Length: 123
Image 1 (cartoon, rainbow, N blue to C red):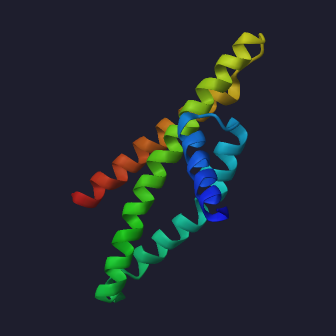
Image 2: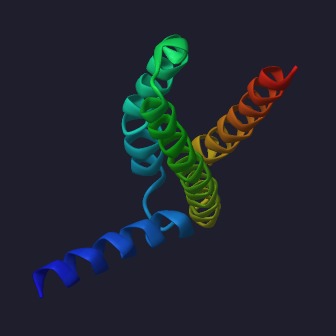
């Protein structure tokens, strides 16, 4: 029974982030920055050691990269939506929404950079 509850809570957490229902500061800094560091470190490792990887290493790297793509989409959608809720709440209260707009700009810049990096890999 505990296992089902843990699975349910994990699913609800993933869903909550996707919907932007977690606070912006936590979504951005915990999941968008701190949680992403090991992903970036492993991707960097794969990049600098690519020529020395075995077939198993290449397959593991590919599986990891696919998982990473899902993570990037999930966290960027979560940050964007959380920023939207942040902006709406701040406007309701008559406060400035600087951090909400900043988060959206950083998400957009990050996606532009990722697209450019991806295109450079093909040319």
